[in-house]
Image (tube, rainbow, N blue to C red; front, side, top):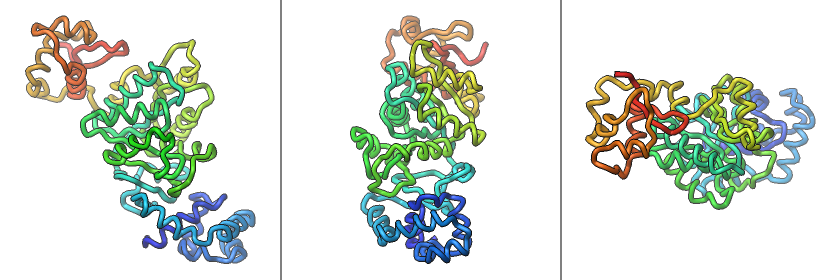
Length: 365
């Protein structure tokens, strides 16, 4: 699609009632520029579009006749690329959902066929939830999967930051506003970092302010980009549960972290588990479903560094050890980067971490 056409299509998506399916029908009749300028009566006659939608389009053109040009200028000013569904970079998995976005504004690099896991949860989360979201984000990204979340406070932010802590970790923030709008404002630098290692994306034009109505629609993109969705903490009624339900409706995997029965932010996760979501206590529960970190590849122990070999020697298959217990068992005393070394060994399939954050060998010898 030519550049000018893209911005006319982007303008059409701002018309209430013109969803992806209806727009696809219209585009079979005429290109986006012609549709933007078409007389409402002709549009209703040729495409059997409800009169209310035709009236909404006419109103949009009266109020913002230069909307396509304004979108083009705003996109250029913030360095956004405008993807449409026919582009080779448009994610294949996102095309499969019921209502895929016709356009995506992208800052960064959105890989077409990357494997992704969504990590979502409460904005007002506990320290327990924050810690777990960061850990899951880091280990999922370290294993080569891309972490998708919504850029919000709480669990989303922790998951993004965790992914960025992993060497070469990638993450995607899907916003419910324009990609040039930092919401929340304290995440402006985080969004810049995400764009360098992944992408910040939105279906809303630059400059669009965050409104409550935009976030449920944003959630379908989060789940739609992802093969699986992990809910770390969520209240009984929350946007995170909407994301999980959307994932289920598309036949995607849903994971949920259990928490205290006394915590309101665990009620949503417990509900999901009762409904069949996979109870998830450690990143390996997800990585195993992707065929990652389940079994040590042949010769993996030969590639261990001297420090990793010392750690491996104090571990056993039957008796998991905490990090403190590992340090006490090492003959040479403390290893400063023990957590990182254990993560690398887990990714090699040599070590398994249990739900109590204790480690054992992955295989009995």
